[in-house]
Length: 148
Image (tube, rainbow, N blue to C red):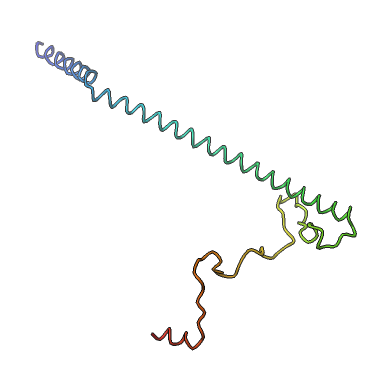
């Protein structure tokens, strides 16, 4: 029976020693505080991500509404400009050739009647923003330039 008391005393002493050691060790306290800060930072980051996602979703809805309203306004201006000024030449009417088709309510899309690219596109590099001049080479010089 005395050996049972010794084993129980040893177990209780080991448990109390581990608890006291953990509570009095400064590294353990520092680790706990760093872990709490890490958890708080993770929570804050996740909360910020959620707010950002909500912001972008709301902005997308607002832009969609703005686009639809702009199309309606443009269609209204085109219609009223042709109704109020029927004898106005096409070159003086800013809405003459740019009237978009009406919005298809089932698809909520807008199809433009203009199928061509904007005029500010160039077919290749124009060198407009470069400081050096383009060099013009005759066809005979091209053959000798490639050979050398």
